Length: 459
Image (cartoon, rainbow, N blue to C red; front, side, top):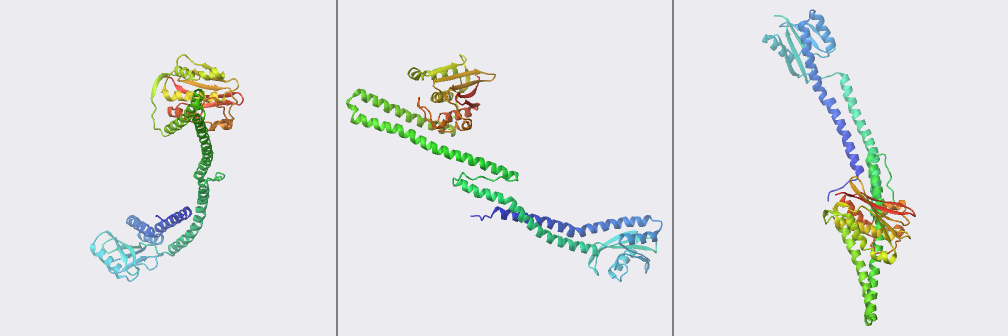
């Protein structure tokens, strides 16, 4: 396995490496490239000085000024000896010393007969690059200009020594700053990692502290939100297990009990046996409905089935759905108030939208008030129809509204069981409407009722 290191060590390593790299570049530019830059400057100055000499009216004064201001060694000679030298600043000038290498170059120029020529060479006596420029003044007079191509002044040596000291101190200070910065950057991440491990173990009481670093703040906000979602999911998971267990246990118990009664008692009485068999069938239907809802929800969440959109009359479908509730209208005095156009032509998956209407009506029946009224209203708007299913029950608290679409969430954990319900109806509604990209929502007023609504495209 690849060896891992802590984020603090890694940040510290890269910060120190960065600082050393910067100082190295500075050292290279100031020390290594300094001589190259100095050499180019000296050559350029030499060329300018030659032009000044060639155009001057007062040769001696010009040579003296150049020697003083440009740190050059200048000599006026004939073929055999020096006539005059100018060397006020440069110590140990190659022209004034008995340097055979320089003399050889001077003789070479005199013999060449050229008007001007430069010689770049290495002064063996000083082990330094130098530049010699010869100018033919007349048939017996020559001017030679000599300059070093490397700065040998004491000021430059002091500067280089100071850069070395600064680099050493800079590296030390940089390491200290890097340690501080690495801790400043990594301590929040380390703390987040520790708390994230606690979160992974199921501890939802932790809080991820915010930071003044934007990216870390965004991360802590996300993790705090994830913590709340995980806590909610964990609660829903427990509720789901409790509800599924209860919903499965009740019909199974009833089926077993009535089957035993038929076996032991009512098999002799056909009427009672038929009643008991009807109960078994009803409880089996309840189980089938629960399993089918679970399968439908799983398929929709996994997007295992594609929508089969078509044009249909939603008003007609609602009338057909309401016919299925005729029995509870007659036996339990439920009232269904319908307010919709005679035709509501829409474009959607008919089977799925029927499932939405059925689940919302079912929900309204379970939670409506003592007047047992359920209102179905469709309003035509510019581009779509607004479909509303309204009950007159006790309503939903505002803080509970965001959770009502969750599986097995029930208002105050209690609901009437006027019709068979699995606790998955609103989750299925949400999934279907989101697959259609239809806007949906819920409005509720305590002690007045609740309105579930969605918008469906006009065909």
